Image (cartoon, rainbow, N blue to C red; front, side, top):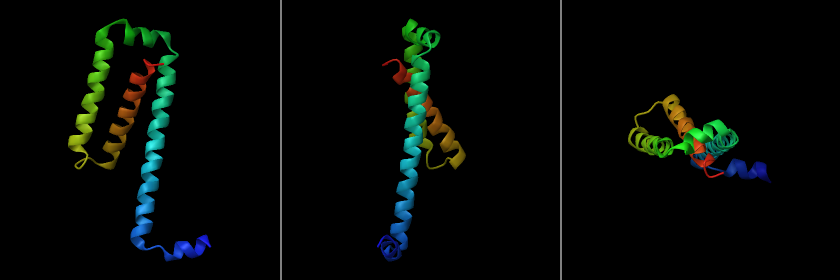
Length: 103
């Protein structure tokens, strides 16, 4: 039954499924990276002391995170795939560090 269904799909539908699958894989990887970084930072007292010891540390982190969002939004069309992957990974890491303060 599933083999017959696959034969009936148009090329556009197959491409759409492939794109959606890749989007979900990238988002899962980003969430996983964010979670791992958040856990690692939250369980490290020295890093937490740096982040929460002064308002400047946390404020700088929030500014970096917002800056990455603006950069990605403005440049996504002109970026190479490697640059986009690096920027996405950087954003996931910074988000993990930010979320670690919530834990």
